[in-house]
Image (cartoon, rainbow, N blue to C red; front, side, top):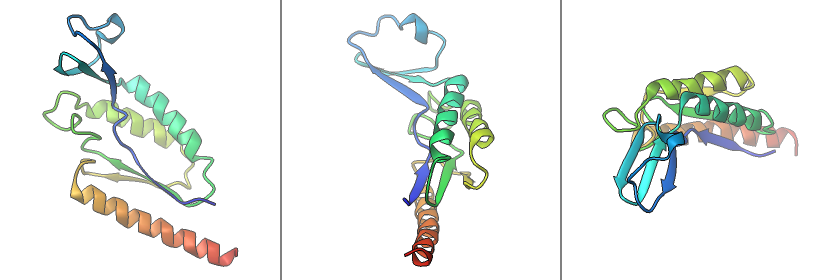
Length: 145
């Protein structure tokens, strides 16, 4: 049995190192892009890509043997994914969350927090939830030595 506390983080972006950004590759032309300099491009994953990621996350979590919970920050998953930033897309984030809810075992709690991932408050919530499932884990081990 293993103990798992999971936090959704920055799968909203696909990073790519490029030498010259004179032209964005055609397959990325429809994506939200953040180009910090001539050597890097960050592209926002689409709602459909996030739904696919959610299905895979759910598939893996559903095989968990020990206590598990997933924490979802509702105000963004990275420094580029918050209000006013170039990769902010709450509709795409919601696509992930909704798809996860459809496919995740109902015994696995989903905790939605009205916080951004990169905040002290979110870190505190994560620690508190980890301690809660750790206590469940310890109780289970005491029953089954």
